[in-house]
Image 1 (cartoon, rainbow, N blue to C red):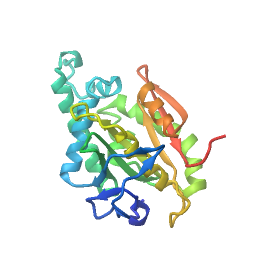
Image 2 (cartoon, rainbow, N blue to C red):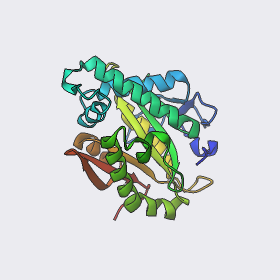
Image 3 (cartoon, helix red, strand yellow):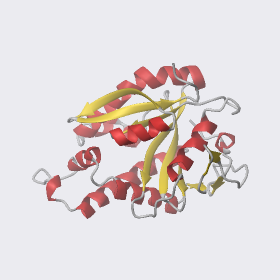
Length: 256
């Protein structure tokens, strides 16, 4: 799915990427809240900024810790690793994932000086999985992650594919990485600024190619509640080693 620059013309967002067009430099407002400034880009600084935020925010996340445990030697133990070692592993993994996504039209968005950061990725149900999400490619070396991907794909096929076929000829936007960096001062509205303007644009009927649904995976009850607050609807869930993940979708329409 190629990135359409017109589809990425988002009011109030400053672009540092040739693939993301800018309509005007004004701030977006929502619910009487003036949102902090947002910029987008695909440069090394943006990619590293997101990878750092993810590593700092999720070093104790159960699912991330589970995935990292697969990369240890047979006689290794995740409990024996320092938090810094786990953060480094998460950082390296995020960098590898972004390296697989950016060439296919993904971009990084940050709000308030990287207080919050996210990666938006265009996908299609008719394309083969990117190498960072290919269950077959990692089944031998990372069986736990492969199980996660297989269960994710089953939920997508049941709940996302019919919507994407109906709305957008199989295309969808994937919020594939997002983090609130705990080392950067909290800025009110930073998370909203990375979600609402993009959600509104991607699902707008005014786009040249029509509205496109938005998909994400929530890895905790707290994350699920945050995304639900902004309009995402839970459509399915799966467990790997007792750790639950939720698939969520946003279409820009009231759900019945």
